[in-house]
Image (tube, rainbow, N blue to C red; front, side, top):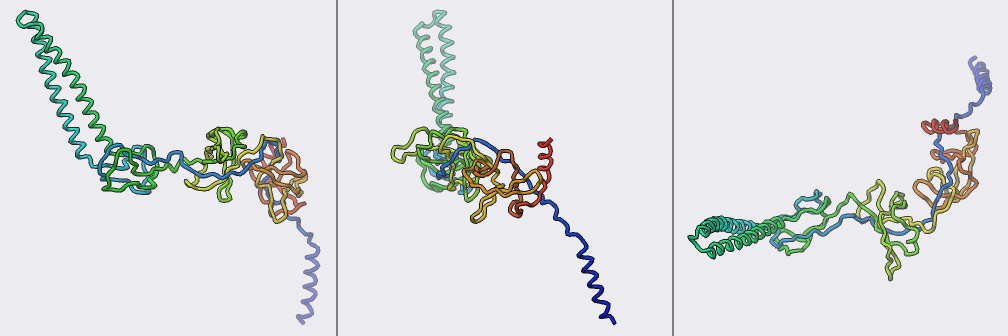
Length: 357
């Protein structure tokens, strides 16, 4: 009895399902960016090394046995103690210089008093003028001795101050060049100090590129597949006669790389020229395929094959059937297909509407 009713019910369900129209998927949310016509220059990738702007073998000025030395890895501020020598003899020398000065000060006071007294007596005719002049000359000589004693005291204090080796800049101790107990000679380095917070890139580029490099010029830096921004801080307009290279220093823009890291710097190899550029995010790269998705007036996507060229910042030169101002998908292009309808997402939609009005 039940078998006779199952088939009609199933058939009715299929009829109802067929009667429901298929729903069109909603437009995919995307972000857009415009094709731009801008000045761009081809680049030649040149190897470089990340160095510190402040990297020094810090030396001591005073001879003596080391009794204190900073540890490798210590982070120090400017003026912090890096090393200290045994200063007992130097302290005794300061005390000796202080005593010598005090003796001359006392002698000077006595001689000045004698000069005043004999000058008065010479005026009264009690003593000869020659005696008074002799004491006055002695007083002047003692003044010179006092000046010499004060210089000697300052020198003794300076030698005592130099018993401590201080950091000339904030940085990290990366190497000990002597050890505690060793004798420090004047001018000998005790530690290597490196400022790791202000890196820059040292580049030796072919002399042929020198005419296209200028201080303040933006360049790209590549490190382990990552592209960073940099600015030419300085360059030496003198090439090496053997290597035919010249030196540049490139400052990193809002990025820190470890000192000693190997990088590549995109050096301009010709004068800038006008070219079509797109956002790097708009470029879809697949095996054997390089294309962008253009969004038409009706909101549908169109595939445009392109040939990438040189890059500049977050944009890249392309050759293809594109015009300045055309909108390209920059987010989600990998999962879209040509002819699919899209809508502008979030804040980008408000920006696009404002441009249209």
